[in-house]
Amino acid sequence: MEHQARLLWFAREVLPHEADVRRWLFGRIRGLSSCELDEVVQEAYARIWAADIERIGNGRAYLFVTARHIVGEHVRRSRIVSIELVADLESLNIVDDEIGAHRRLSGEQEVERVMAAIATLPPKCRQAFQLKKFEELSQREIAERMGIAESTVEKHLAKALRLVMQVMKAPAVGAEEDDGGKRRLWGLG
Amino acid sequence: MTVVSGDFGDSDDVESLAATWVVRSAEGPLSDVEQQRLDSWLSENSRHLGAYVRAQAVWVDMDRVAALDAGREIEPVPQARHWPWRRMALAASVLLAIGGGLAAQDRLGGRIATARGEVREVALDDGSKLFLNGDTVVQVRFADKERRILLRRGEASFQVAHDRARPFIVQADDVAVRAVGTDFAVGIQDAGGVSVTVAQGVVEVTEKESGQPRQHRLSRDEQFVAAATGTRRVGLDAREVNRRLAWRKGQLVFRGQMLATAAAEVNRYAAKPVVINDPSLGRAEFMGVFNVGDAGAFARGPRPPSMARWSRPTRRSFCRGNKIRRRINSGFRAAAALLP
Image (cartoon, rainbow over all chains, first blue to last red; front, side, top):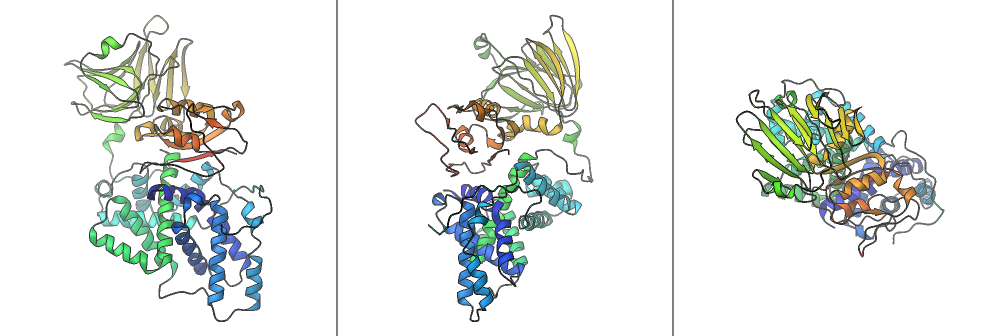
């Protein structure tokens, strides 16, 4: 699969489930900081990127299982493992309910969510972003139109992207509970 | 718990850096020096790679959001200066059915034609711009007193350079759309009838559908339809108008249309038509953004929970489970969901 197609696969099959994985880990492992959560998620993305995406049937399940492996490795690598933590880790083995509880946003809701985030950006930053994504102008054209330096345009765009990346971490309000999952055990195939 | 952290800062820095790299590489090819810097940053730590992949996925996903949201204003951003093209922006879409009898005229001068699934932009010598949708034929006839475009087949849209002395007229069948310094679109459909859709500004439509020539003034977000069954005017919202003009970006956008309707629209561009075998599936609401001409992606896009099969009359069958097997042109953006 070529690069762009892989990214689209990530956007459709992994990204929408990230918030659930975060919540799942956060609820089960005590003392997990959001920074550590970010690290686990980043590591998971790197591993899935290296995997044979064509053969992954269920992106959501794969993301859960990958995240669980990463946490397990971290625990094994750390010198001091509290009993509490091991118990927490045990609970991570029963993830089928979580994987089945598929909270899906409709396309419209996803749009609303991102738009709401973008609306909170400072005006110049938002304008640069809109010109880039909606009008599909180049950074040079945006710079000319807004009367600012091209490097400033890039900063605005990176800031807007950074914000949306942050928004994607939170479970979306209005995500539907869709309890369609049968109980089964998941492993890395 | 303690997650092993190497010597790297907090994830905020990693994500900011990732975002910057994504924005920069989306703009165009990186210079050799930049590419080396990016490569070494990515190989430094697998989390850098993960953050970069994630940031790219979000960036790609925002294309889809932008497409689904095409043209919707969050709230107007105060503008430092007026955009001249905004002032003269007007889009209308004229769709009509044409029977036989055009082959002879097609050989006349000023003919521009596109193939199925091809969208082309043409600069006219008066400074106007012309966008041709797929399977479209127009003839450009510019004279001293008027600029006339004959639409023979398909759909086109125009950004008209202002010239009071030479009115710009697009003619399709018995319908003429007159605009002075505007932007509008014209098209021809199999179903018959002519429709004019105005996104911005005002156009004057003259039609003889009722026997006598009649004039109609249409303004923003209005649609006028002249068909064998009579004429009618419809108010549209801006998003719907934008949806209908998405082909100018080479896209088809659906927002809750019936699947059967969406498939019919996709089939206007596709060499191999999509066929929906299950009538109840055809009535399902559909949402998605597709490249013009990519019927295969459309057919493989959404997967309804039922076992209904979509098929094209070819040796292929699609939609097994939720697997996405796509060969996608770079720049392709697709998103599809059957609405709950």
